[in-house]
Image 1: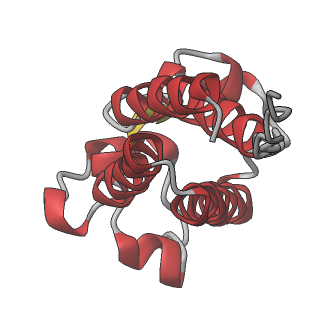
Image 2: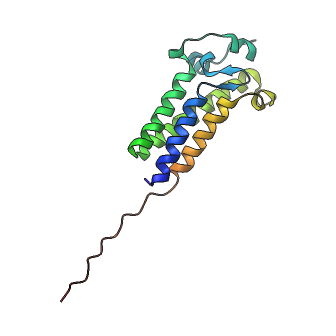
Length: 154
């Protein structure tokens, strides 16, 4: 990989890790959303404020998944592995996609943009880092330098 691709992946992994601890939607943080909420959906009749009031464990929260994804992108930057980079980016898109789908299904997230435009810097940092990592992985690899033999001296 090119050097600036390593640097872009490293910077995006740091932004993703910081964003994992911030508010994702409204005041809801990743630690308030459990994996069961993503798998089964949020309980009927629950509001975003009630989701924010949940105190989930770190091990079963979305924050852990987001941190693992950021760590995979960081490892891709450190070792120059495009496979790890693509794995991290695709996993990040999947987690954010499922999160958006479940939040829209339960709370009509895309009907009321106020929750998305408020203090959601965690979502912006993680999503922005994910976009930068995706763009960095789309940059072509370096070409191998062609070895041309020196002309023979007489």
